[in-house]
Image (cartoon, rainbow, N blue to C red; front, side, top):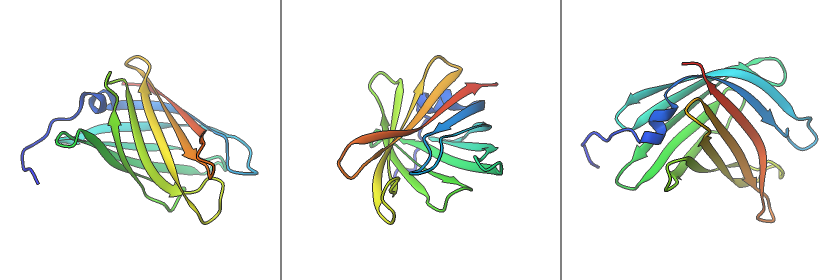
Length: 160
């Protein structure tokens, strides 16, 4: 393991700041769509890492909290990280990459199936900037037939 300090990837550096968000989800099977708002504070932890701490209302009106870490491994040219939320028991582990143009981050993960109880499924989260002060995160899952289905979109707007 290299002991050299690695720099923060430019894509991750763009994320640092204070944000508000609007969350839209298709809901789970048999559930109505969900929409709610919140805030996210992203800071540079040092070296190649950022932390993203979110707070907002859940569909049931309770307050939820999320924490995501993302870091860039220059040796592998990959982004790794993790995501946890107070509304779930699963820890999502990320492995991904920034596209060649530097405009899109794709994060692969595995977690409980969105459609089949007790099964695991593949997930793909994408983060894309639309200017410096707006970014969009979408989440997709791969169903049992291999098709990718978008179930969530979050629009983030920079406050500072």
